[in-house]
Length: 342
Image (cartoon, rainbow, N blue to C red; front, side, top):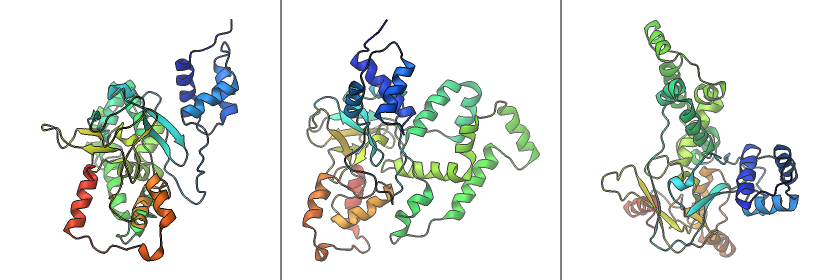
């Protein structure tokens, strides 16, 4: 018997299929859908419409073949309603990755959501693998969903702009400490202690991503630095926020008892349904060229927000100012930018 799935069911299924098969186009995703659900009657036109609405088709701005973009994937098990019903996750394209769009009208000054930090430490991964594999898998899916760019790729941009050379010796030392502590202890006594605690080995996938130096360890280091909030926390939903030089959201630490951990995402202006929520990754008071230079560290190429597109059209070489060492006013502005209050 033929069945026509509801819009909600079909959308959820297609989003999951695209997350599991990001390289497949519309026709192949449609074929895979019918293969997995032979009882469904769904036209390719309907599949294309839903994928387009969810931002899962090709972008109007193609990726630059000379740029190494961060990898980004959807987390099919992510429950956004855990934090808010005002936004949903949307996959834009390979260049931009995923982001958040409003599902309802959001007023200026409204708290969109509050969030505690997400942390996965090595010891937790190993112990959860022994006793709570389902939770480990769920958290690991979130980890894999964070945008990722290896430290070497980030170094090509952020460390080559008047900053110090990448400290590869420290990277290697940190990796050795991780391996010696949680996988291959040096002393026989420590080896026995670890063996008693960890009777069940990690899956080859997690073991490789966690303990292999390159790309595993370096990729995870880059992932942490790429997704960290300005004060150093790593947040699941916050990590979905993309950049704009004229952001419509601020991120504040305004909880009295948890000021150093819990964040509040607040609308800086009214946001309409379907509009993307954005924050700024750099000091928005910087001039166009300086903002573009600093944004290279995030690996998505040139910023094409409305402000940058408008400024680029009127830019003159003599208007480009290269800042020297920041004075106290510069530092104050950077701090305010990090807090999202610029």
